Length: 82
Image (tube, rainbow, N blue to C red; front, side, top):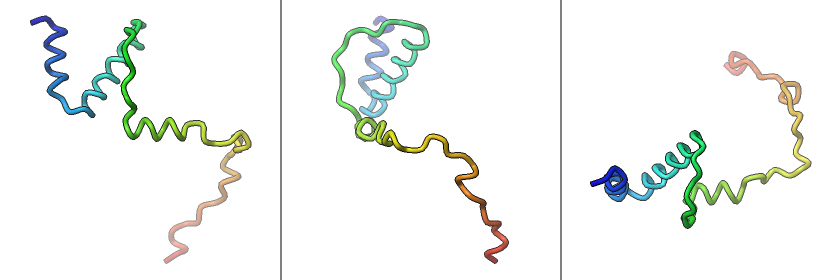
């Protein structure tokens, strides 16, 4: 059995969520070492990925990007509530 076949056997035994995590790790390795990813069909997005994709860049262009500590106000010491 080749190394690729051994890896495939292990991956097939994993639940789908861990298979997805394994694929994410492999694509991270490809990126890290500059290896071109093979042309493969895309898989359906997980529920979390679909949520993030729907809401990515959801902040409008008029959202202030210059918020600083002055805008946040002053914290009230806890002792004042006792």
